[in-house]
Image 1 (cartoon, rainbow, N blue to C red):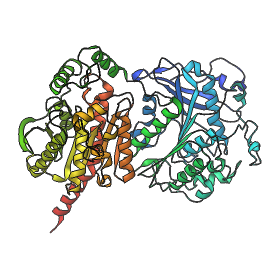
Image 2: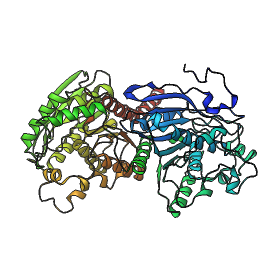
Image 3: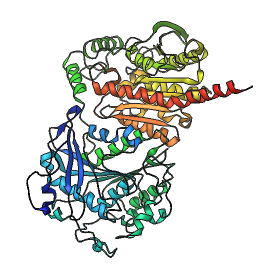
Image 4: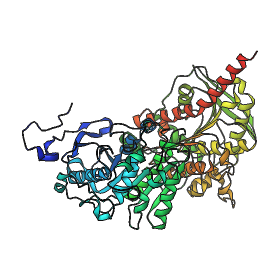
Length: 637
């Protein structure tokens, strides 16, 4: 255990100086952890601690101050709601290149509000005062809070200085002074951005019993709003962020679950409207789910959008650095005479055979396939619209009733059954599922809709012959990476409109919007003429599908350094806006192709494994319904 106080005798009024600041512990990936540092020690109160995580960097890193929820009465920096823990929220912020300070603050029964607001601001000042020691960028600080922590983030990020107590704001009769040691840290408490996850904005409107329906708040006879109001330094109106909206506030991102019964989503809508009227930079994301986004798979999309907001507001849109193992792979590939695969040095497209030969060499020399054991691999073919369509069948060792049709990527120009057999084997072995790979015709020899027609015909054949595979047509999954993800999503739109039952989509960095696809690749797939309106065809740009609301649960995975990152985020947002369930996994530091990099990058391997786990999770309800129906049938006389 680290030593948390000075072994030397000294005055009791030493404040933070009475506490030894521990040396950092180095975690996986080079992250440094400073554990249990005292950032404030006001007379009469227990010391306030924080934990600081700092990612490796050759320059000062921006800082996020994480503020926990718990109804102002519960929680600590060490505790996260289970849904936040499952989705590695804090870890993901660090992987995105931000330092994270997880802070404790005085709970409402220890000191009435706005004591906790002072605590948050004291943490900001203390961290700025020690920025050089920790490698922090003192000019780039954001507050990120959830639930009650979001409420504190808004107030701490927006209010004017409170050094003389609350009287300056014209509310309340008693002051809560700044920490005694605070004068030692005169740094600014201003922040550059605020992230508000399902926080309250109008406490007067919430006065009364609050449902403790989530895993974040412990059921109690005392509802939090009543406790806040019982011994007020500020009244509920003064404690409402909505009261303090004015021009010039820090840019604010707001996210809320549509089914939140504890803090209704209308609280965030009111705040968002007020901020827009005050011309404050703000963004509101509403997603399915309750408090803490429980009951839905929305949190990954919210996390990705929150990090995008911070990158835009604090870093000017600068992307996360490529993770080291992937960066080394790309450096070796870039230094070879093999890359780039699809384009010549002058930018023109290579011929199909030339590009395919280079693709084989790149795979063999730089990222050898990561195969997973399956019980059987068989090749076959079906008769397609214009000749045979080769297929490859992978059967898992475990019993499985799910069938996955997997469509390979390669820019519609390269790729085949061999190039993506390893990817398919991961799904077959780890889901588990029967996997059918499709070897569709490639451009530029065969332009759209040739490959699309092959894929659609193969899917129809699989469903018609489902007894050869998983045997359950209601558990059909369409999957693909890059160009294959494009074809899977486009085929889903067409087949769903025809009434086919598709259980889920697994889309690995898919291209979904040809309106933003580079012209040379579009020309290779669509043809040099690019028929007017062709890029807007839903069979080409599935983001424009008219039936997005009918899409099944969709798992999307993309690296933040992928050239298709923005495309994938827009597609996830379109699905969310249409009401279709979607999981967007945005993996910091990963690039296009990571699903094939498992043998050279531990982070890529973990990302691919998480996507398969997400697919298993969205398929679970269908399995449960099937089990329930079988049990009910067996119980009938």
